[in-house]
Amino acid sequence: MDEFWHLLRRVAESVTAAQANYQVWFTLKGEGKALPEYYDDMNDGAYVDFFHVINAGTYKLMFIELGCLFDTDDRSSSIRNLKKSLREIGRDDLATKLELGLKDFSHLVSNILTIRSKLMAHKELGCLSEDVHATNEVIPDGIGHLIRKCAVLVNEINSEIFDMSGILMCSVETMRYENATFNMLQTLQKGRS
Image: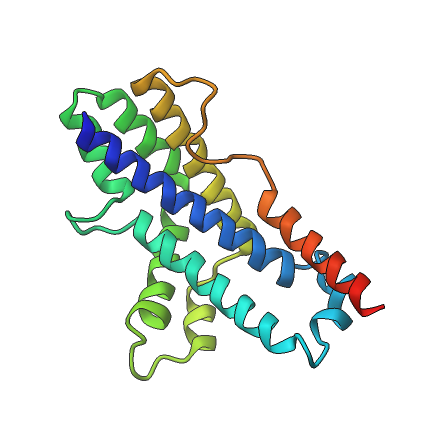
């Protein structure tokens, strides 16, 4: 059971990291988020390079962590191996619940893996970012829904197997990373005025 616990914890870490990077990136770049109010602060010559790095970095890390979650390698701490492990410990019910819970996201996951593979993990020769994104449409809200669904499922598995109801491995509905980003922007804005 220690091996299963380790796998579940590693999957939860990837869900949390994907969520953190998604929330920071989406707060800084998403429509109706920080841009209208904080554009001048983020575009200040003293800070603009920082925000360019953060935007690109959180975007890439979000895809890398989601790629880890849906990796098909037998050696990875992934959803696929979590389902396999659940079946090995006699919890076909939870493996099926995990599979069915993510079924509607299969096209999105495929597109995420393609973008991650072609532009981030392997940086394929001849692939232009615009073309890869146009061919493999990924809507930011869809990514957010996928991450939240993964968090809910991981928490349910944790609760069911280890009888830890009320103890969340992954934050589900919290916007803590978005809130932290807005707090930082407010502090920056106050310091600039």
